[in-house]
Image (cartoon, rainbow, N blue to C red):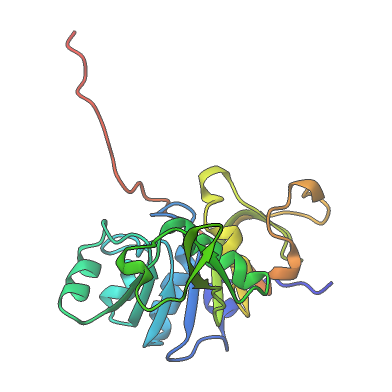
Length: 235
């Protein structure tokens, strides 16, 4: 098995980026996001991107960086509530947006990675989500056809990885990352720790190496998306 380790995000993404490409990104809010890859994509200047992600981070961080630099043409997301620039661009007609229910989005990534071109779901029936999609009845219930997602590139963030590309995610960061990792024709992972051969228990690996093409050890800011505090009790 080849050593898939690169020195940094820019080197890991070299030769993979092009204008008009589709990128699927793991993470949920600011948890488990591939922040090093996002910054390198911004610095590359690639444009007209379609980004598939649960959300677009926040203003000034995460995928919000790519919105601010106007490199994104279209977002496929389930939530836009924490990013004012996302909202502004969409309402101004400057950004194309495909809303997708959260569970459906995760399943579209998983299906794409499994080679499944589409599936039927009840989620979204009777709403704007269903407009223009095939409807079919099963056992007296109406379902809509959703397409699996297959992207030009997947970027994910893991807790631990080995040089072969086996990945382990930590707690809440194991959200969209496992599905996203399978949905790219090429997958680049950034990890907190690169571990020696054999250090990962095979039974505990979340993303097997077959899905990962390149990886590197990153440095992470780990911002808190919403700080909630309570008043200090009176003495």
